[in-house]
Image (tube, rainbow, N blue to C red; front, side):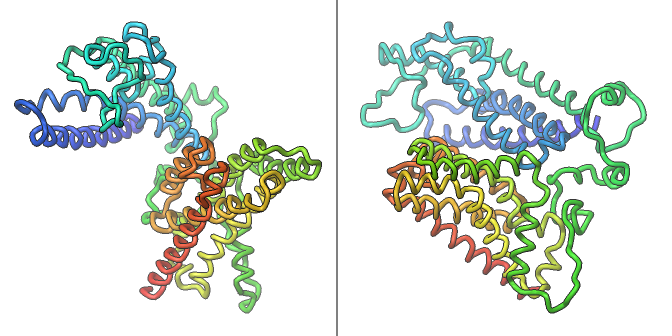
Length: 451
């Protein structure tokens, strides 16, 4: 019942979003449209498109929140790639296929309605441009060779309404699945509890059961940092102070390195070790190629994400901001976080950097500079300003997907593409990163003075 209530809450957000979009569409048509403005005819498609999608996404979010392994950075990465998969599934449709020949699987995965738009406009496009074989109509301005067409409307295909109902049904099914690992409250009976006891699911330790029941969002990092019930999280240990004069920036930096590296899953340490050692061995034996260097740089650009995500937001998420602001090194702690993130990037990427320099020459250092400086800088600024790693992860994964992974030179902060490196794009990102650190440090200094 609790999860169903959460699902209704998430759906309410979708309804509000749809209302805003529908209202904007009505206003837009009243200003620029042709003919009389019919609010109902304009608004109802928006709700049909948005609300079922919100039910599905809200249910997936709850499922990830109830599984400890997916409640943090790993879950957000999995969601990012899952969303890309669903969106890219539309490309499985043959470009020359008539609507009736579109595979059923493509229609079933039509989350945002791209295939629907193709289905609705196909005949109108063919009437205006016979033999048109592009994948979709362009609803923007088009290019110099763009040809316009007039859409006269028509009934929506029955398959789309079935798909939207199916999307809602899948959302409800995911909510029921989420009830199995859901252990924020202790229960003693019921069908779900009997099924849970027969499955190898994570259980909340007895000593945290009381705290979990009183604050259901404690097991994940979804809680508002401003109302965190515990000043220090379970995964953070404050080292004992043996000598009051044993401070200094080097000690702060060492502590930040320990804090960022501790608590990662074993598979992450294994992957980081392989990334640091294996490519270095390949470079020493002369077996590296330019393609291998690019692939390794793309991997190095995402593997430390689990470490970078902790930068900037830890003081807020663990409720220790007042202690840091009143310490001897409020700004130094922030800079120490950033330098620690840069050092970890250098260690993890050492092998890939060696291959990149061996195959691309000294100019490869341009990409190394951007990869080492920019990600920790963006994490520091975004984490400090929001108190959460989510903004950084969303922005960074988008940049990484466009740039290092798919070769978009405009977002190539890692120097994976030859064009991006020749244009100095990584240097620009590195400069932006340094600027973000300066602004973040100034922000910390302002809050320190106010305190």
